Amino acid sequence: MALNKVVALVFDGIHPFEFGVACEAFGIDRSEEGLPVYDFYVASESATPVRTHNGFTITTEHRFDQALDADLVVVSAGAPEHPTTPAVAQTLAAAYANGAAVMGLCAGAFSVGEAGLLDGRRCTTHWRLAAELAERFPAAAVDPDVLYVQDGRIYTSAGTAAGIDLCLHLMRQEHGAEVANAVARRMVVPPHRDGGQAQYIDVPVPSTGSDGLAELMDELMEELADQHTVDSMARRVNMSGRTFARRFAEATGTTPHAWLLRQRVLFARRQLEAGHEPVDVIARRAGFGTAALLRHHFQRQTGVAPTAYRKAFCAKPLP
Image (cartoon, rainbow, N blue to C red):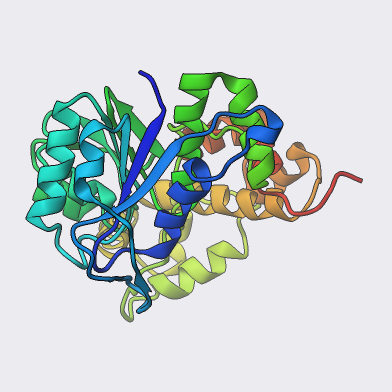
């Protein structure tokens, strides 16, 4: 598709960060670097100032009819805290019918759904809102784990910085990797995070009552390097293996083995973020034993290899 005119819709309750992502990606003149320049408009339903989620207001010169001949219409977070107005939904539906691509950033996916544009499509949103999105729009295929999804001319992203990844993905499609990388350098962000990459959701340890499971989990977190079986864990809380597995699943929603794997991957993530120790050393500390086994489980849970994760998230420069 051609990507020239981009319109961002604003409405009461909008979250400034995701709206700012659209402005940063498509509303800045980078022509001195030979990069594309977009006809960028911010549009509201009326001349009345729009009140953001954070309490300040935005006044715009343009109205929703600017979206009707746009190449891309962006709607950012705001719903479900503030339900999508009929005018927003109608504008998105009309723009799409006229050939525009529609992008929902974070909870903006709810507005795309209200426009009837998620039915039969893959989509995503912030992981905390994914279940609600799936309930509200049962005909949509909601993937709560990924950073962003493109399904035809419909684009949706997870929360906050994932919106930047989605905008760069669209630029890469339309203008090539060199342009997207140059824009990423200007924005001081990684040039490419694949949409299938996981949202890196930490799963907290749930409350488990007074049967000793919470205390056991605390101890296991300090003993990840050791090998543990269902029977060895069960003995520590004076239960049979079968009773322990059942109680554990009731308390955590998963099996002891799956929980332990998850904690080991989370430990490895923190180690990779903190420095540049060899992957095989981290693997032993996490209880995987070998770097190959760590890579297998790490990629399975996060969608990326340990080295790629470290490159993206480690705050320390290489020695």
